[in-house]
Image (cartoon, rainbow, N blue to C red; front, side, top):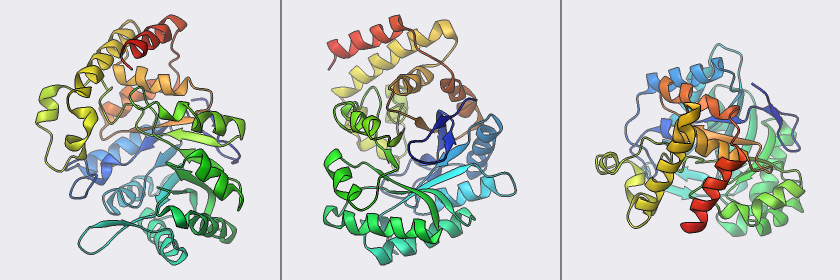
Amino acid sequence: MQTRRFGKTDMQITPIGIGAWAMGGGNWEFGWGHQDDTESIKAIKRGLDLGINWIDTAAVYGLGHSEKVVGEAVKGREKPYIFTKCSLVWDDDRKVGRSLKADSLRREVEGSLKRLGIDTIDLYQIHWPMPEEDIEEGWSTLARLREEGKVRHIGVSNFSVEQLKRIERITPVETLQPPYSLVHRDAEREILPYCKEHNIGVIVYSPMASGLLSGMMTRERIENMPEDDWRRKDDEFKEPRLSRNLELAALLTDIGFPHNLPAGVVAIAWTLHNPAVTGAIVGTRNNRQIEEIINAAEFRLKETELAQINEFLAKHP
């Protein structure tokens, strides 16, 4: 599988990476319901065997559980690049809070290193720019952690252009992780052009809009989601947006059909078509899913297919 230079870093990454959000399971605010850890570990190993060379997780996913799953999956083998995130913390009652204070971030990095079973994190990212008044303190702390060798590279997630400019006065931002999909296209307006201009590596999350564009989502499936699946509360999974999103997924299924590819691969390939995007984070929970989405790394949409998608977007803004 071909690789791409990841912004200012020395890393060459594959166009898709393994996303471990859902692997954190349920029983927290943004959980995906119960997950089978054995299946999650098998999926990670299968993805790595197929050539994917990076995994993205976060301390808060499953309140530490996702990192433990990733650590178990990479144990005893040549390690891929491992990316994780900080700034979302939780208490003994499993209530999630936000902190960018130096002492909190230092506790977080030690916890992540222990759960992942590694000595250095390849990419450490501020998960959210909150509290906003502390982003300079948080970014300064990540820069010091890099100097100390705890992490190799530093980046941010969900930051605006204005927030990037603020922290770049301290040290350059190496990478950004924004949401980006055919459902959530806000990043096209400012943040992606800015990153391309300033050589900031971009890995986008939720390229299939949390499963909406996978081609496997139905009204019945949404109705039967477990109570601790956060998507039950998301407006994109409810009317009036749901009908539009399912119609879009149907179009992607039609486009993928002649290529023998599912809608999800088409959705991921669409995000990778943007020249500012280095890679897409693809959530997976079993071998079948990873074996399907691996095709997105090489699939290229034709101009006629892009025109079909653009026509739909124009009619359904």
